[in-house]
Image 1 (cartoon, helix red, strand yellow):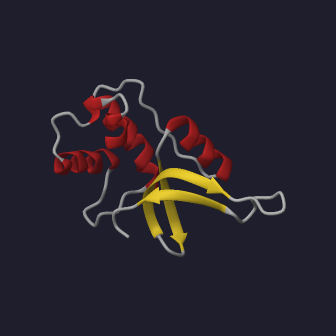
Image 2: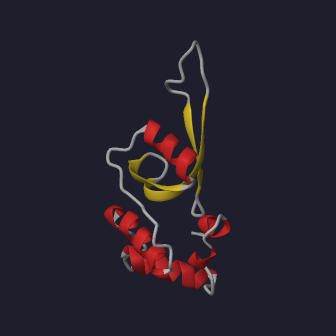
Length: 123
């Protein structure tokens, strides 16, 4: 939300401290008392938060299964997005903010050489 506030939608965080912003997002997404948020609640919660803060054009969606091309397209065309990992080796069950991507080509192929750039405050 802070990214979007800095890129044309200041009403998203106007008048909110970091703690208030976090609390309102947690509430909108149905985050549980143990800190976990059901994956299916993230997109609608973020969309509803933004719309309630006056961004009527806000949208968010849940893509399952995710694809590399959808991730690249989302970053390129829409900016940062949320990536939720389930049972992943490093992150286990955790969500992070996707902010970029890079591909390295070897012998004409990038297969196996595709990387997401993520921001994560908990690792």
